[in-house]
Length: 368
Image (cartoon, one colour):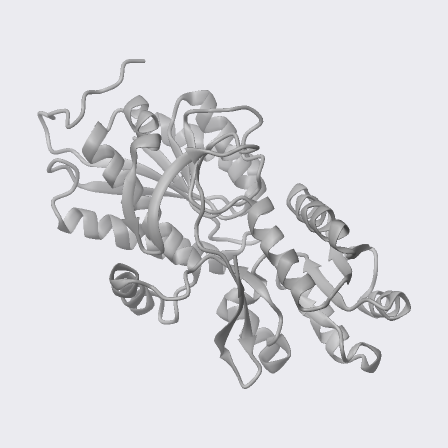
């Protein structure tokens, strides 16, 4: 497939279509999907306000993945038939993996916004790039936080799944050389009461929720918070369940002081501040890091198309040449050991929690 020359001329002003994959219905994490779509849509509108791509407006063609890998793969095929120049988005790692495989097979560029699973593809591909940090990177930062806090007897309440199993493995491998241990508890098989008994018997110093939200994460938090034997245990949620307002709505003060991973810098620059304000107005709440990932995704694709053209192969060829200022810092892609896609190495990583004094406010506990 020939690569389009940079800044290829077009004889029409038809829209440049971009596919967007987002979880907008259950069992997808709908709050994440809403924030991701807000970022994608805001950036598309700003690109169009600035003249589009060589005078052609961007058009976002949205498909709801509902956290279903098969549905996402089918959506990618549908979008390819609709002549999109590229596909963007997705939050759930297993879903993004299915989308990436189908996109690579079809020769369709896919810029993954928010999914972190290291093995996004099984083999090296030129078609896929990713903005979110790899899970092995972020979850090692989280393990460093635990060890630094003197927490070395870690229990994980995990549901089955590639993403949860991968996260537990990263934690175990990073904790073991530092004297930490990891006890695996089946969040599906154990009732909240039985899980509390297991924690008390093990003498765990921390419980990490590797589970979906709101079920079973919310009942587990309520059970542990209500058990006097576990008054000193730290509850953690590295996957970011407490990031969204629904967590605070469901748990109130009980949902505070539960550290999670967030991909924001300590302080946003002027671009991040401007975009954050606009996102907040759209969402009616403080934007999550996922909303910023959505905006950055479109900014990257717009830069790629302006410099290399809208041909699919040309966009894929642009990944190693992209160099833009994103909302969270300079974005460049490279080949990273163990990662088979083009990767931004690395976005900023924080461990944060909700402040017990005001659960609507976040505290930064650790950076990496």
